[in-house]
Length: 237
Image (cartoon, rainbow, N blue to C red):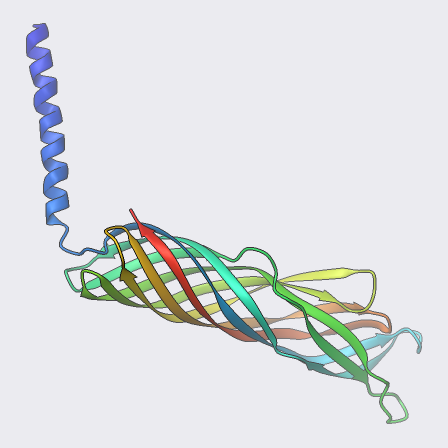
């Protein structure tokens, strides 16, 4: 009886390995599977602040219209990512991926001035802002050029945290979400390691935010858009 049980177990294991081998041989797309990657590059964020007003401390909280000016934020950027690529057939793929950027960007300047009741404008007040905690979740349709080359597109959701210092002791943060579109290329250099290059565009939905400044709180609709160019390396499991 013991010999029969051992034989049955060996037969079951052989069937499992045979099934696995058949599944591997049936995989006609060389890019199918899980992967991890890391990339660095350059990015630019273009902020917008619309319909802004200030509750002036000098005028006992009176609300005044505000005009703002913000420098575009140019900074180095990075990401780490995980994903899975499914081979639709030997030419087309469909992937899902998630990425996250480590650290915070450099800071950029902005300024505002208020329109006073007598029609004149106040002297400018300066503030600084930066972007951090950038994340994305995307669907990536791809085209297999050959076993070593993959071109792909990206579409999905993205988000970030904007940190703002309005010249007071308070450093304020606001979370934003939006959409991301991208194009990319991967080149295998070994059986598992590949290089990648990407260009991505993100549109951030505006939201109402209040910035504490030395002249009083400014409230406006804050949003923006950004673009980045990335190069990196990945590992396909």
